[in-house]
Image (tube, rainbow, N blue to C red):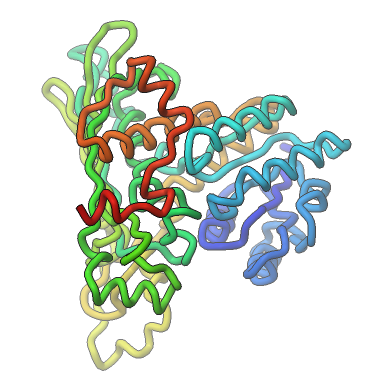
Length: 414
């Protein structure tokens, strides 16, 4: 089997997690990195772990020239500009097998649509990286329940929650650069995973039609004076002036276009979960059956007492976003696989080598962006939006949430 050579545009947290996951994916090489902070360290990791003869390049064009496919893993506000440079390289003769973008595809619908347009003009296969749809725990559960879905009816209620204590980087806290707060950051995960669980077996990822959304965005922890001070000192972000939501929740109603059956997706996300670390919980209910997933339920626990705590230099060795280095700690032996990164990389490799889109393409990413933006609009207006209304659909095309414009005080402090 031929190997696929990947170039990374971005060397931050998600790029490092991707490289870790690549250790478990055969016939995939990390060969090129765009020069940014952390790129030398990541290139060294790739070489030391047999991922390829990875080198750092000063231009995006050079990364494209050294790669079969390129992954856009840079901060949200840079992604359209990065894709424009990739497009220019391809137009000038550089050959690529495909292009990848980490979630979200855009900070708003206009940006996401531009990404789709550029890839379409180049006729490039695309992969939208939404790792949670590749989680083995979810897909094994859906496979196990397939006979029940076929005999008594499909799942009608899906619930997905993702919570941790807050992002790693300053741009993630900045609602203008990031595109919002917890809803933009993690709501895209939860909305996509809910839709996935509601989709009948054998149907495409975008089969279920969104028909309405209601949502709430709030600032509960990081708007308090002591935490605002911490954000300003640590990241240079002032939540007294330009806050983002640290909590969101909502319900999207979907319709099965074949049967007319309605189904509900309930999502909740926060940057205020100060327990063990990242927690993802998912559940699905159908007539007479159900399933649940909780990523903090691990086969491994360790205990570190006060006397030994100083030996734990890196709390995240145990769990992503871990907030403690002592006491009873949940440890996930293989987070890269648990969260679905291994599965999505394998799917991308196979798809691109066959000359086709990944299971999730950029059109799908555009749809998830549309639902996230609809949730922001519903929260701002305090009403349930009818997503089948052509007027609402038209408004969403140019919509930018007040939070993403740096005007979050108008909706979060009222």
